[in-house]
Length: 442
Image (tube, rainbow, N blue to C red; front, top):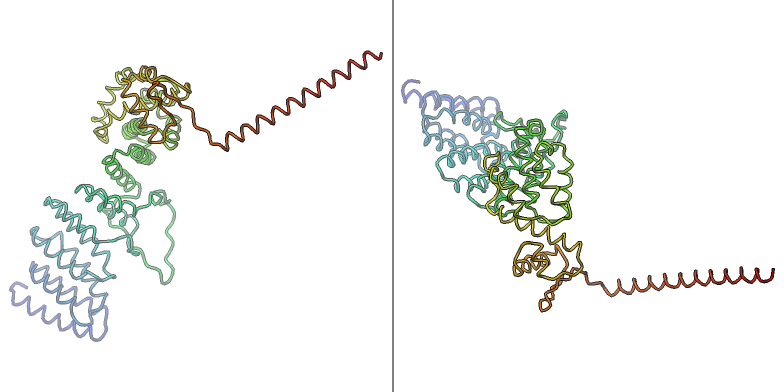
């Protein structure tokens, strides 16, 4: 195959063989002829001829599906051997056009698009790479391995986050159910029944299910950090903390547990936050970082926290987070920490006082009267607290307004108690009278 003429002659003769086999319906013969043509082009390093032959063979009348599948799979093996990036892109695009719209080579098409997107990303064209990846809906591919599907969707999410398309990133992330990571991988795979799709094995470069779980939650942390959703960030770190490989290595779980504690403190007070707070306090590993145990204890203790004292105690730990795994806390974290301390203090005051002056409330919170009023109003608006402010009198009332039905029920209950008491009293008086009468008769 030294000369170009010899190559063309060999290809011509193989094309005639391929035609005879195809028209005769000989699957194995057609596959052999098609792969031999591609092999000849590859060995001669005739990349343009290779692309032309792939297109020509795929478009021949009545071409067999098996022949197209084998052809695409063989040509994919030649991609790493291409001499330069332009040739590689051209070959990938040729294979893409051949596999487009053909359900029997959908997995190969997905892998080709992923390779092309990686090249585009390396060239700095992140938007183009993200657009390419979004064209493929791998969740509908029955024959693709579960881990490969998850890895592909995670790559789509990552590219959307890189181009700061947070809406599409959220839509794509919902295609993965977190429960899929809890599946027992040790169970033996069932043999497919007759008529069922045969699931292909995942390529070697696809991470394990637990590694994919970690990647998924790290991407979720990036997404929730954009909207400062501290509770969801905390839950994502909690899921990473539960991975066996992380829990066994103190160098990995200590930074993660620190992040869990910080984001718990930063989360607004609600039932989910309280539940996570209590479950984290019960964790034995928390004794390894006693500073953070003390921080969480302060949150569940119904006592007013002095902001300046707390900040002085934990400022160094807060600043140190940027040196830990996972990087620094989100930009607004310091301001939000102060907000959470103020909210905690207002909740504590509402437990101990039914009415309090605004001046006294501001003193307890170490704020000005205007700031205290604003913080209290914000909590009332967010329904974290029930309160009323009498601004002319400067009095805050934490008493809840009772429903008319509740008041009537309370009155009915009080009347019932009163009548029971009268009846008991009458019975006691009658008893005493009878005793005295009996004593007089004697």
